[in-house]
Length: 500
Ligand code: NAD
Image (cartoon, rainbow, N blue to C red; front, side):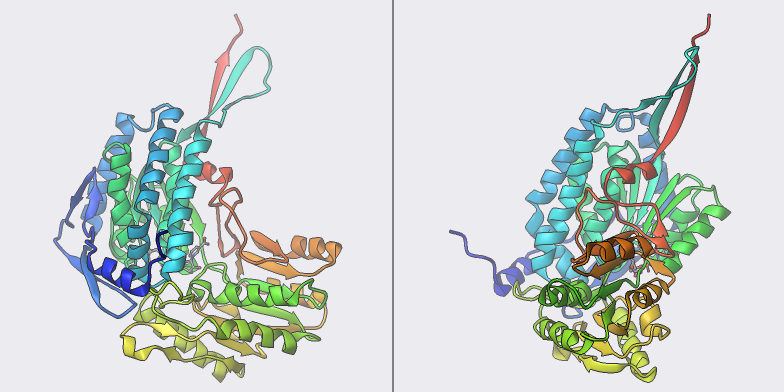
């Protein structure tokens, strides 16, 4: 029986890796037109992995031209859905075939533990692409119920050139939630990975080609937000931007669209999700475990992180002890060690930002109960201890702003109505949870919570079959499920006069 890989095995494999570091345009790897590159630094130890093409407006022009030409040629856009299914299923299979390499790339690039990149990110990405592949030849168009003197067909058509702009926290997984439906629907796609995490996107580009995607249908442009990202957002030849990232940058994309060609924009943005624990929660140990994983999983770099813990005052102290006991077992470690649950923060800038918020929490009068410091300083990498604040007031910055790190803000409440008021007192509305054994309380609160996802007696549950996305400034448009296909298609009515 094969033994599970160890830290040494992963280190050895990492030493033997080669990196795809050029843009992928029209089916070929090419340098940036300017020849510029940027260093891709591993947050595990601060070492440079490779120098990656720094794409700018000229590269965006080239990629859009390739994507448009492929779209107009129609080899993909007009292929039978069953053909697109076949190619995308093969694409998903190739991602799985290279799962170990891709998981390693993801971990080296952005610091998440290998146990999760290998079990969550890469298989999840393959599953998303396979799921949309399977869906696309099962969707029927419509005939409208018109007067019998006419036949009105309502058909879905691909929008054309889609720019997918994604963040660094789940690099390939977030990309796959866009690639799956956009490609299945027949679009050409330009994927712009975050500058902190370009490696898996660049590697899967050639796997798409190998699977049978025609040249120009899937392009990858590494580069910075202000240059490559902005040029995509403002391009007259991009028909749709599918964005996942911060609320601040999401707003830029609305502006870019308004100032260019009115391209459609869908936004999956930030969150400050409330996790509400009522005194009658059915299993406080399970709730505490979920509360800890809800904020410390992926180093807290999760859009729907359970960053605000709202607990009934009567159980708050005992409950927080349980949460901290779980948190204490999640100390950061080398992400390449399969035993590690909490890895490295993505880079120095994000580490500094999170530490600033911890200082801010203290300065505002919250009580630091656990963590609060950098860890593993000798590694040369970016690590922060799991951190818990108690006695947080919802008006404090650590309760209102998205920290995107392993920092929990605990707020006590006296009645469910107060919990709801606090929970909804935020600009965000991505996710929320309620823990109670009372089914009517659960339904009542779920209905009152202004969030795209509400969990009852669990946290962070979901499948590719369920829509994911936010209310308010967490964005609009939904990833996952068949609803995601709406973003990448437009409806055409063809009215046929049957009267003689
Ligand atoms: P970010 O907004 O800084 O960057 C996201 C992407 O936008 C990157 O590719 C970046 O290069 C690009 N970008 C940055 N500035 C730009 C600009 N001026 N013009 C055009 N493009 C620009 O976000 P991030 O730091 O990479 O990721 C963290 C954020 O992502 C958090 O706010 C998190 O909540 C959010 N997120 C949301 C979801 C969701 O599904 N709602 C999922 C994951 C992450």
